[in-house]
Image (cartoon, rainbow, N blue to C red; front, side):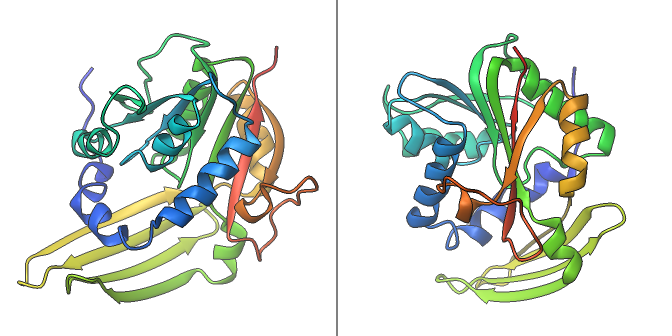
Length: 256
């Protein structure tokens, strides 16, 4: 079935890729991949699905550790970049597909993860369907990890703006507003090239409150194991995110 155009098709192209390239450092990727591997937990030979993998930065590091990673993304351009960065058989498998209807059999993976809010770009009913699809393709006893911004923190400061100049002279301008009642963050981003050419787009991402995650997981056929944050991921005693936490990670398990 052909999907209708979605704002993510334009936003997650050159606009997003070029405006965040300087922020997604190798060190940050290492820290995030370590958090994913620790929380799921993952070991050599495990079959893992990276939902909305983008340029494959997490999938690439996990594959180097011997994990059998499959990265799925809707963007052919992002997947080509991911393939170029990991040539040969040692890299992750890459599949073009939609998070709303995953092209995999039930129970195909030991674990599934989605990083940076890429799973919840739709209305609540569709978002729940996306999580249910993740639950479908993970085996009984397997885990599903979803990461997104911390809505408790955003509710404290619902409006933000930023302006950055990139190394090539491009300018990134961003205005965001968080609607706490709906749990939706609306972000307008503009990238102006040195020659004057501009790219612009608007993203609307749904961030679920800690109190919503238990019901959300249950409706998808999962059990909520815990809520935590990236800074706490490697600790034995982890805390549920409060307003001070930089992000939120929901760790779920499929009942056996």
